[in-house]
Image 1 (cartoon, one colour):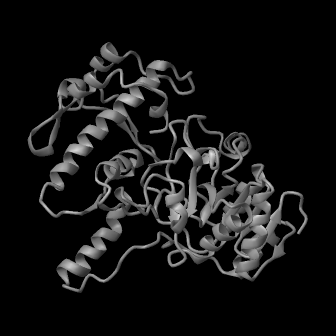
Image 2 (tube, helix red, strand yellow):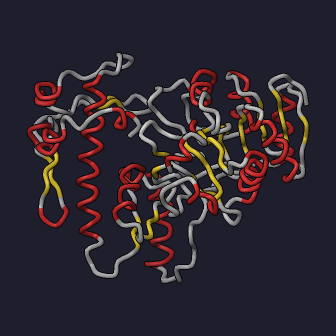
Image 3 (cartoon, helix red, strand yellow):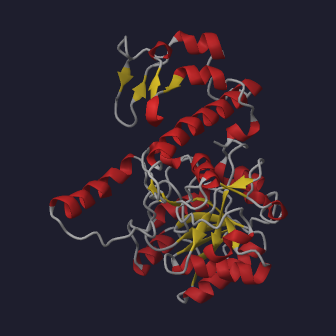
Length: 377
């Protein structure tokens, strides 16, 4: 998705041959582009992630050139292929959704599956149907089948009423103040304990306003792949250089990959061309031209962003931090990226401390423990 914004749909017609339109929004694959319908594709699994052998046929190489080796330069061909793939996905995805919404009066849509994480395509849906009530759960991929299966049994098999609404993603483990203190003191680090959440938000906002990169580990862990203000690295979105700072100090990822903003839900329409909520960072919206320079570190090169809209009801502490930062700077938004460094998102206080120590984060707010890079409490 990120690389697509830098290319042109030069291979769109070729990809329409790979994924072909059928009746009533359905599609099919031209099997000449793949090996697995005719051959056995090798799979190696020696613990960890399985290694899948080449499943695409030589036709890809003949039509689109050789595959890019890991670490090789990204060329115009690669950017154009990314843009073409994104364009074709949006076409097929859009056809399926238009078919699903064909019934008159249908104004609500729930999406799941891996493609439901394509936030750019989801944003296109809302541009076409601004009246639509779109819901994408925070773990729309395979991980979401766990809670889906449980609710299917609870509601459909056992016949219990459907009363639960998933309004926030903080469903994972939490850690007590005692366990956090033990982790910090066990690492031999100096810290200040800030029990009051209003003070905690104020001190963090002060750091962020001054340009600090802050690790933010609060409450229960998010369910799903997005950091949503519980296991996050936060920074000031007004500073255009912050994207490069984060990549240099911590993330070390491809420069074309954008960082996302978290914003007070009630102020989102001031910054984006829509007021549709996006509590789980699953939609990409166009940033209003006048605001692209205001949240420049969180605006992609094509003028878009993938926001998280935050309400007090769903997340009181993170909402308080955004509100305090907004009161001080006039911008009720923060750059929000996952708390990790080329690894899974941190899970425990010990992992958060380890990530803080080996990267160049300026501060860590770990529950009530406030740690500074300088070591001062």
